[in-house]
Length: 330
Image (cartoon, rainbow, N blue to C red; front, side, top):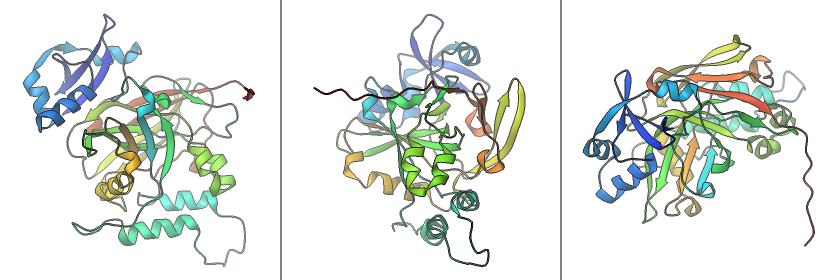
């Protein structure tokens, strides 16, 4: 089941469920989070809650997309209680791209591994543990809170001080923490993790700086299991012309870690198990336009699509004007 959050033509919130090639209004429902809490309380799943509430009239989700009425597939009344996080070096083939970014010019005959390659090899060796066992922990990073979660169609804002504004086509897991502190997975969605790869390349210790950027998720939320083999396309459009395009792979068949292992190493920290909090956790990528020497420009449109996720995720790039923060003394 795929779900979408939107504002209808009358200015009211609603949730729509995909039924074949169309969407139907989920009755008596204003948010996906509402469905999640109802499922936790009833000790069931979201699909059953949707079925019990029933589906109503057809919803023109594509029109809502064109008119900028789509919402991120998860939100809450207090953005400070949404955590945006992610992990990297998790996809087969991704290490070569990341390592090339970090390797300094030196003796070409030197066979030492960079930290990136060591981390990637750790995942290959023990990122998919046997059932009941715990695998190696992955790279992890923090992106921000819900104030940085950008809806499909809305601009991704790159700060004036940024050295680059690059897309990262990923899959995000979306979670809510139950009343007893247990994490519940709501579903999965396409994500543009959006990072500053030039800044990261200067020094790997700049990774934290490079990741403190907005991200976008959606439009559709898959409720249920993530397909093991996801094949999609990432592209950059400039003045209605494709200036870069490349396929991307995801799902556990194309990863060095299991989803279960990545989830464990995020939620093992009690700070991420606070009742009521929402988490958007991104699982990494193997495809970057930056690796092909492409630099996105103001007004470019990032587009990420994969058949299992329905509608593509599109966001224009907007570069903010120069500003300097002045701290005032009290």
